[in-house]
Length: 215
Image 1 (cartoon, rainbow, N blue to C red):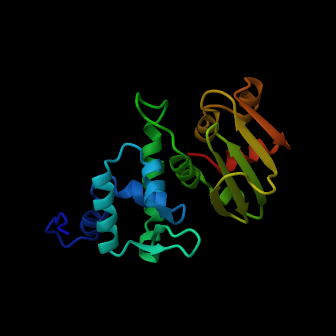
Image 2 (image 1 turned 135 degrees about the vertical axis):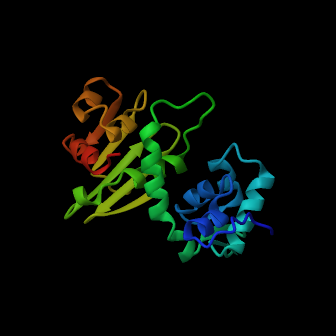
């Protein structure tokens, strides 16, 4: 499959040839969450045309960034997943996401908030230096979906669905309080006082959450 070439002997140019096409980086973003079926990727990227998704997945495979495999019985589904080479893009995606987050306030008209995007925002905002020698689990309920976060000695694991044993459950009730906590525009005390979030567990852990996840 033909790819755009920049005719420059440059690492950045080579990278852009592999992942610079529209939607490619967001597909990689979603595959960072683990193996995904085609339908899972479509759900996480509701605006992508089906032909473009198929083309980009093919390009990522040909570049050695992603692969596909069949799940064993009884699933009988084909999933796409990143190779080690593809997963090595994660630090670059985190840096780009943190840079882009500076321009974000409220969602623009027509913009959706997906579980995959929120999972990436936690990776982007995570501050390992503030999470050393700590073991804590958070369950973040965002209405239509739930994200689980486990921090163990400066290492973050992100997943979908309830946490099996959360130290703190954070439930969004109105507005965008989780983002406001992560951006520093609202303090944990303010979020609790105005009723935009509800917590279950030690409320003091909300301060720890805000310190470890900060854009």
